[in-house]
Image (cartoon, rainbow, N blue to C red; front, side, top):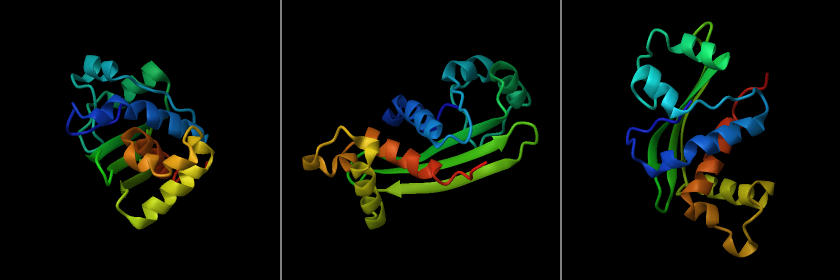
Length: 163
């Protein structure tokens, strides 16, 4: 699903859909299928749907018919601060299409002002996840909204249960 943010003109929406799709793909628990905002605009008169919105009656049926999916991953970016210290609030829910039940949910704000997040960012950056950054730029993720979003997505999806 396209990510939702209250400010539909927010810069984070220009890149977060791709980042979250790639990061959830890396987990390998299921095969994600990206749905473009145009599908929602055509069928529901809005480009993005929040996990807290009332869903149209045919919502799950249309997704199943058009994409053959078994579940829907809602991602709401409920807060976003692109300047130091960067922070990103993520509410995500994985819903079974047949039963409508939540299979997983999380509501977390990843804040670079938090000491434990800074430590995690440094470990993440030193790992193979961000190979293009040199040793001289050890705080690059803390200065890049795009890279920080990648870190936040990986952090959130690491909590998904295995099959």
